[in-house]
Image (tube, rainbow, N blue to C red; front, side, top):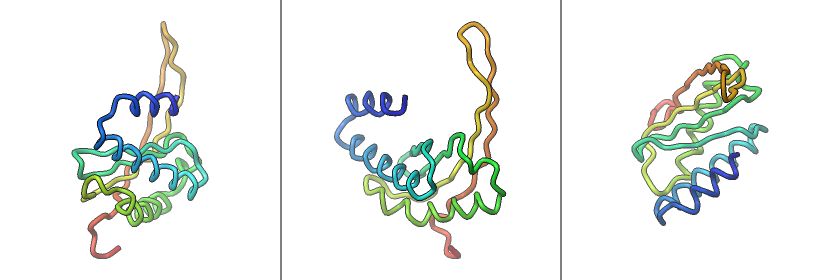
Length: 124
């Protein structure tokens, strides 16, 4: 599904948006490789803030200290991948979705924790 979504976005994006998408995709791949996970989503908010989501990964059960450390590590590398806008802030979300959605009836429960990347902090 991720590849299909990327293909559709690539087909409909403008030149600036394409560069932005490529940069976020490169960051996503770097994070996937570094942490050995596959379900990473990178988005931006108002062209100033990055949001990195670890969706259903082994890190969901990690301690808050481990999650905060990961967020700070990503905060150190993320701005280097993005040139289309100045990254002023960022957060890392660890999200777990459980359950199934069925056309007629279904359920899903999503839990998440969000941690600040510390971008712009002087005490990183």
